[in-house]
Image (cartoon, rainbow, N blue to C red; front, side):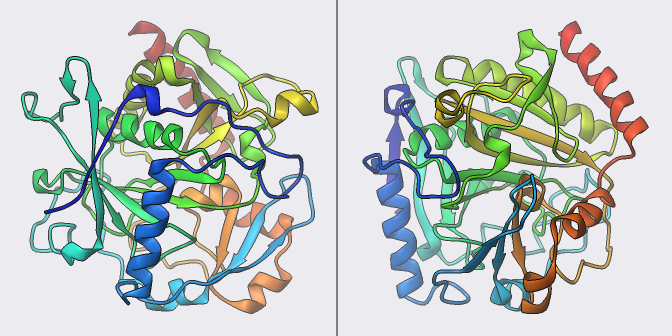
Length: 365
């Protein structure tokens, strides 16, 4: 039987700061969440449950204002499971294909459940009376240290379409960590999701990303909804612990809107400073009290040829670039990266039209 990890809102960590530059983050005592995931992940790797042994990855920061974090991870490119054939953003779950009910049970780290005063959180999709668990398991083809998957009760067989529960627990997982390098992300179908069974990614990256403090433009302040500035065009939500449920609901409204219109998308969740439209003071820019959630609408990729250097998915859009080969890792420039990413983003006029539609949609709720 899997280990159960119960948590409460009182377990959320808000006093997180980051030193300037790409130095190590200011030391905070690791939480039970961090130590459990890290120790369990190391245990599974030592026992040979991962497809390869992941040591310290060769890393360099690309020169330029975006501060892209490039890493060489050849084995993930060669050893990972072949992605499933995806034909639609709303493709139904197929029990005959690989899914997370077919994994080795030893890959499971724990099952998360939130302990609330009124009981436990509940699932959606017709399971309103059933307490919902989030199964956390190691990713056997890791991107980085501690790479795990968050799977809302695998037995429900949800397709790879975000639910409010999945979004909320993803945000809460970031708050449960005292490490500003812990990130969570999601790839929709058509946006390089490789398995059509609802899951989010979580991993540790001990380098600052510009996304944590990049300026934003307010769109619908009542819904904590912004546009990312000076970075690949996307929408940003920001939340501190007291507004997690409200923001998770608004994010789900946006992702549902995108799914209904067959618009592929990636999400990235990270510790970040509170949003503003200007460069902040060094002190304010170092605070990581809240979580930034970025949603990138994008062009769909169905059966498309993969890029030779890196795919454009959740971490690449956020500024973390796992390279598949040494030549590209050593010679790629920031301009090269931006040119590749731009090919996958919506044209500017389409993005601005979508921004207006989403803003009106959220204001009408």
